[in-house]
Structure formats: structure tokens, C-alpha cells
Length: 200
Image 1 (cartoon, rainbow, N blue to C red):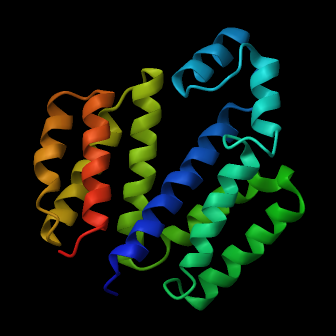
Image 2: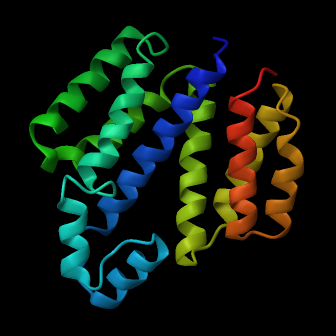
């Protein structure tokens, strides 16, 4: 399958938002105030203790809530109806429906959604993995985690993308590997976004 850039972009963001929601699920509920404050500061969230952060991510009107994050992933799935196999699309829709009917199931269906997507075509898996890895690296940089494994995974993906003609990524990727910080992460992310918007 040869993906249109627009479809590749939807797959990439689907990977990012499913990973973002899964990351939040892994931390929720927040118990310790100091950990909640560190998380809130890292992601610029208006919370001052564990209770207020828990309330924030459960408030469906907030863009950082479980509901809103999953809605973006759901919208990307709908945009990709003609890209996924019929079986995968049906299974994803079933999971989305379950989460819509009971938002408390969102954390339960995230891993199932990821398993389905990872079994799709090589191109789908490539851009989905790119989204997952960039989201993981974002979390690690914000919270001071070990980035070595994630950088190794992204390096493999970048090599694949360069082979596909995304040669402009290499410069920004090399800069990020040499100095792994948020500023260079944003430069690399912007370069990916640029590649989605042009023909290669």
C-alpha cells in the first residue's frame, strides 16, 4: 500500500493520541501531590495537587481529559476508513463504541486498539509507530525519563522514512540525537509535519 501524505498524517496522530491517552491511564489516579504537581507542570496543566489533577482529566469539557483525548483518536480512525482493512476498521469501531457508551472503559480499549493497528500493513505500522515513539519521547523529555530506547526506535523509523524520500528529516534528526532536548524535539516534530504537507 502506498499511503497518501494526508492518510499517513492521520495514522501518525492516531499513534500519538492513543499513546498520550495510554500514558495518562498509566498515571491515573494521581495519589501523591508532589508527583501530580510535577506532571501538571511538565504538561502545563492548571492543577495544584493530586485531587485537582484527577478532576481535570475527568472533566469532559477539558481538552486534556480522557474523553477529549480519545475523541481526537476516534476522529482519526474515522478519517482512515478507506485505509484500514475492513476487519480492522470494524474492530476499531466496536472498541470506540464501547468507550463512547462508557468513558470508564477508555483505558481498557486503548491497548486493544494499538494491537489492531500494529497488525495492519507495513506502511500503516511505520507511521503509527512514528507517532507512538514521538509521543513517548515527548513524555520522557518533559518528565526526565531515559530516552535511549525510544531514540533507538526512532532512528530505525527515520532510516525507513529517508529510504522513502523523506531526506530532509535526517538533518533535524541528527541534531536531536546529538542534543536531546525539547527545543530540538520541537524542530524535529515540525520537520515531520512539513513532510506531511509536501509531495515527496
